[in-house]
Amino acid sequence: MRFGFDIDDTLIDLRRHAFYLYEEKLGRKASIEAFEQLKTVAIHSLFDLTNEEGKKMWQDTTEDIYFTNCPSFDMAKEVVNDLVAAGHEVFYVTARPKHYCEKTREWMKAQGFPVVDTRFFCGMEDHEKIDTIRNLHLDYYIDDKPAVLDTLVGIDTTLLIKDQSYNQEATRYPRLYQWNEFKDLVK
Ligand SMILES: [Mg+2]
Image (cartoon, rainbow, N blue to C red):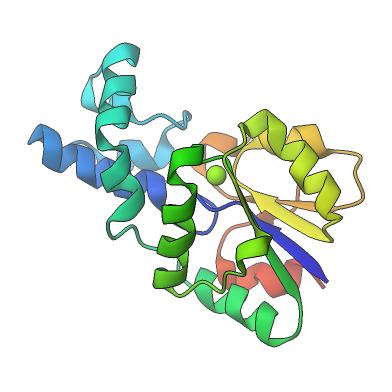
């Protein structure tokens, strides 16, 4: 089968990683409990930053957020490696900016994710993911953003959502809470 994966906040815990980097950079603590209940993808409100300040903070911190030691979700790597070992095809589809694509691909390899260069798709906007995913004729695709999944409804791919505090309203998709449950969802 053909499996497609979003990367950020689906396979890796990027937003939480950003939270800790913000704490470090701003020299102040914020509430991790509030983080875990936050209904927005953007986290700057936890640090009392305006939207503009938050945007700048993200821009100034992007390289660190993307390319330091962001942890993967527990068992995510194992699940993806097991799929490859079982003969399935694994594709990554990420909306990270174009100039970070090559570095992201190599970073993913360095983390232990099985990456075939020709199956790594990057640099499109969220709303453009639909064309990439449609053309790949995937059996399954998983993402954390309802806005992405919603554009894909109706294509011949089973859509799954990675559980996050900000996507609780998206109830139409089978929900992955922990990666060790993935195999049960794709049976
Ligand atoms: Mg994502």
